[in-house]
Amino acid sequence: MSVFARATGSRSARAAWTGIAIAGVSALLLTACSTGGTTPEESEEPADTGDALPIEAGERDLTLKVGTILPQSGTLAFLGPPEEAGVALAAEEINEADAGIQVEVVYRDSGDTTTDIATVSVTDLLSQDVSAIIGAASSGVSFTVIDQITSAGVVHFSPANTSPDFTDYEDNGLYFRTAPSDLLQGEVLGNLIAEDGASTLGLLVLNDPYGTGLAAATSEAFEAAGGEVVAEELFNTGDSNFDAQLSAINAANPDAVAVITFDEAKVVVPALVGAGYPGDQLYFVDGNLADYSADFAPGLVAGAKGTLPGPELEADFQDRLLGIDPALDSFSYGPESYDALMLIALAAYAANSTAGEDIGAYLQQVSGGSGDGETVTTFADAAALLAEGTQIDFDGASGPITLDENGDPTEATIGIYEYADDNTYTRIG
Image 1: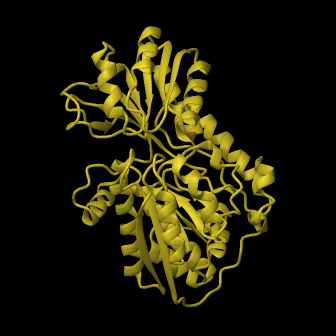
Image 2: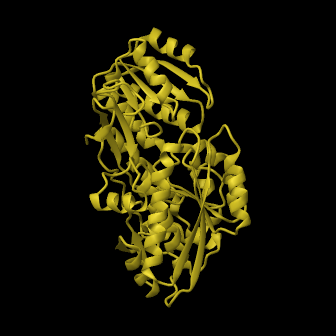
Image 3: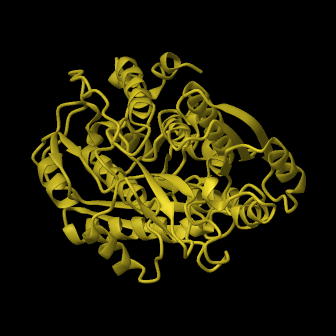
């Protein structure tokens, strides 16, 4: 369904957002094409539509229950700890602000698309009358539960879904995300590979909405830069044998290979290198950019690069996440998870309601989507302004955010990372 059709849904109370969404997407693509790398998207400032919903001044007395379906198991389990830590940190800071709203979080597993764990978890959370559910990390998993969540009048907010298909999905105005669409990550990755000197590209791709969407955007950008995609091999979640796909890629002999997988990278990457493919010509993505120091032989992927949405984290925020979970060895999507709960709580505060539909109505507004709020970066400051009846524009740990009428962030940063001899990665841009 088109962006114009989405504007006729429950978000139509703030009409005229269609033009803003189109401008945001155009700016996103232009930024990716022009930089080929790690600069923040510089989208146009949202228009002041003049139809922001009113903020009721006065004290609040709200109890907000939120559920999570983040990966405690499955092929994205390595993302679960930083995401749950981000949610827990936000809940701690909201409750410590003592501003008239208390948050309770119920943590559940999402599993992956080979299981029905997410459906079971969502059913459990809805039975507990949660106002919002944060997750899943996997786009494919979120597509299995989005209708169940939004049809119940509950906000569905993912910190890591990147499939472009969510933008136009009919969700009753209740689906949001703090991760950018893969239209951006694919542009950056495709341009990066071309700028590194590759003229031919092979892709090993997870056959789900995340994998195929990111592969399409990467291929388009790479070919627009003058390259040629000479192999694109698909596999399904749960596959354990990749011989046919790897043989086809090796036969095409590309200059570079983009590995668009989740945890399957632990199997396919050593197989690629073992077949004679240089590790420094591999490219990783957010679904598999991980610490492989305990999994790969030293130097196996030294020089390989990868992309991951999100800004370079300040040491203070990393320390705060480590205060929640000292065992963290990755912070991927922790900031986006933190911001998801912050925005949900601020929307509830602005609406003076914990009803899912009311929270959904205010989410774009508190993120700065109405174009006329006062910029704030902490929950305590934001709540103080809202209690005065003042509009806010919350800028979070993951960036300015600024949600559009489709629930997508209109501003984002894609980091570029490189692997060292010990198979750990560092940001290089």
